[in-house]
Length: 271
Image (cartoon, rainbow, N blue to C red; front, side, top):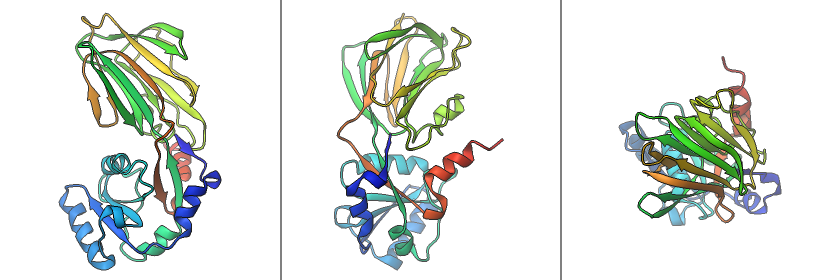
């Protein structure tokens, strides 16, 4: 989820101060590492804990990992694209970096918490900035019961999988699964099936960000299911509970001339 930055004094304070100390991090691609070395020579390099801003050089995967790594640190993350799609990244330019970051628009990310129970009786808790997804583990379709705030809403979904996406993640896997694109300031989650077989006409639901979603796996011994929260995968789950994490935040920065809201709006007119 994304908080309204105009009502978030902590973010206003971050962006009202001058940026003097940079920490450049990169993916392991040669292009990203070379960019990090060059920018560090131009602007200096500090340890992340001493920096005013973390500059991530790579693609969307690196940005997601960086947001996870600096969750609740108070450090804003500014990404520049050295990857492929780079939906979460700004364009790569070496000149005027300090001025760009000081003028950038800040968004506060509030991730989802996934609590997954496994066949072996283990409980795995993980955060998801984009989405929590359940996916069939074998050649047979999954059978999943869906409950919202303790009330069963779908007794049996037969599908390849199902996911819960934040507005931040609505243009990722959710969009590929024909889910809705959500404006960043919408207090909503997208519940989207992946290749649903029955009910054939069910295409998902829009949910309040305050709900608790529970998935129970039916016939799990015959139809095993994996659960994935961003980079964390849990095999052979029997149930998965998802809710917004109330005490976790990360801050991402976007150039003023190409804000995240503008990108999401433009994405809806692509064909």
